[in-house]
Length: 616
Ligand SMILES: Nc1ncnc2c1ncn2[C@@H]1O[C@H](COP(=O)(O)OP(=O)(O)OP(=O)(O)O)[C@@H](O)[C@H]1O
Ligand SMILES: [Mg+2]
Image 1 (cartoon, rainbow, N blue to C red):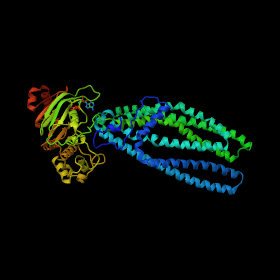
Image 2: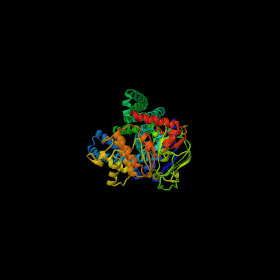
Image 3: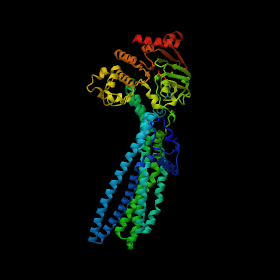
Image 4: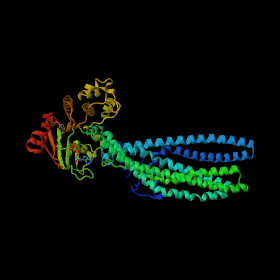
């Protein structure tokens, strides 16, 4: 389960080698030692993304030492100032104040440098790991959405990644800072008055116990919260992606109710998590105040006996008061880890997700010339699903042939396209292109030999030009224009104020379904691959748009092997041959006329289609 094995594609290689990671079970109630072990493995796992900045981290550690020395000195000088003041030693007081001023400025400068470096290192780390995660997801592209919902993935690569801060900087550096403060301040306490110091330290187990009782509850609440929050984000993502559907079904209120219900659960756990935090803080503060009052009370005796001067008692109490910071900080580490181990594991789960499709190490570049497709004894079922999609189908599609894939919904037409592009691998059998098994070639070269026009084409929020370049990175101006003319997309692009440089997508023009499809066909022209797969849009288009698309596609198919997942009668008619998906894992092949005669279900399907066409 390491990044090293998950290279599905020769062009995609993890530059950063990560160690193995052993997942802690989701519902475990880990003890402190397990938590620390998990934290160490998480740190080791993500440390490679931090390595480039190790020098800065050493610098930050040195700054922490400097800051602690400065703080210790400041408190000491405040005590001396009080002593000089009470004894009216004004000359010494002036010198002490001058030192104090210098130390304050120095201290703040060091703190600025420390926090600036902290953010600098952290932001660079987040950028690297987010980049790695997205890259990994993209290379697993298709099947990963079977396992993770989009909203859930969003939560993992945004808020969950942020929580890795705990393991790489927050806990290690804060721990160092706390230990330094403990060493320096406790030394000062003993130096000032060792008896008072012993009394103060005897109180410390109380603080530890107070956190020990609350930590497991906070951890449980945090785990529930992050899980529920992921579900909530998935739901929101889905709703935002389906606004049109929601409005047309007028189910706004129903969706909102479901949203509210999900939110309620997430809110319940968020509140619980925060409430434990707040309660913990308050309990801690009460204990600290009580301890302070007790120490002052004990100190009065020493002052009366002349063993302690007022200013030094002030220093003592300030040192003691500030000791609450590291004690509280260290006590909170397990609580913080509890919540963040699960968030970190959710990120690692994504980084470790394996594609079912692995590129052979000896994979060659595919150079399909003719584009003949052979399907040989193909058996396929989606992993974890019982339904057999293909039960040993075999088929020869000759170079240049145009085959219509027809069949009831759910019979496996899109699945065949998925297998051809190797989004999945069959359990048995193989697919060959020009006699070469597609498993023996690189994924990139395989996919570069196939142009696909999806039902819902893929576009980015950029100019038309950049979208065309997705299909052919080095396309010239003339090639782009020719492709757009051939696909009839030029008809509308020509009229746009900025032509090819017009923005489309979220911040740009909103094109109609038909316009998008023509642009997708232009992309396919530019791709100029020997094999063409068209997943025809089943959505209705106006007749002029449809006519243009039909004509563009008939031009596009020339001299290519074409598979049309056909929803239109005209496409079925114009194909050389029909493959009918029977829906039971088998196919029936024949020309349109043959199937009309011999296959009652096909006949029925066509009747329905033509009937529907006539009604239109
Ligand atoms: N990623 C997946 N995981 C599990 N099952 C899937 C997945 N994708 C599709 N299926 C199932 O496999 C079967 C075949 O689906 P496919 O999308 O290939 O059908 P289709 O013939 O293209 O249907 P349509 O005409 O509706 O597009 C369906 O029962 C579908 O529910
Ligand atoms: Mg389909």
